[in-house]
Length: 221
Image 1 (cartoon, rainbow, N blue to C red):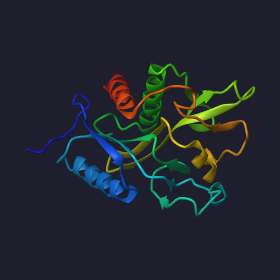
Image 2: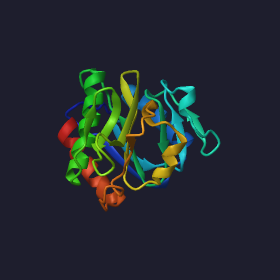
Image 3: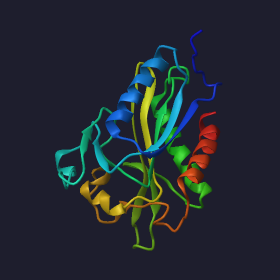
């Protein structure tokens, strides 16, 4: 009998160690989306790391890629602009049957943000949404008045009623790598990029994964 996910059924979770090649991950994710849409497989949340690379979302502007030859660049169908992925950053690919969960894309994006905000709060980091700026942000009064840094990003796509792509949380990446892009298309000096390590939080991936799983259940049921 075909297995069909519902809001009452917990998604499957997958935790990948090491660095997963982006093209391979994308192929596996797209195959799983088709299987979920067809009712052959349950929903999936996949946590992983990529080698250093850049992905271009559907809103990426040509001038936002500041260094084009530093890292491989992949065009992708997700929403958003340029995003950096690399070691020390936890990527969460979220494949949910949105039709069975009400079909509200805006609510889904809001819930992804809430998931990240609650996860960060568990590590003592106060983060939140900002009007006109995608992602999850933290205030940086240590850098100056009005300074804020982006600590988590999100970009999604929906196909046949199933979500994919998802979020990225900066645990302890090399923040200098973000200089290859203009994060969120924002060039103002007072807006930068942060990580848990940058904020003085020592956490390994296993600890982050555990909190992500707990907080996901709180937000998504």
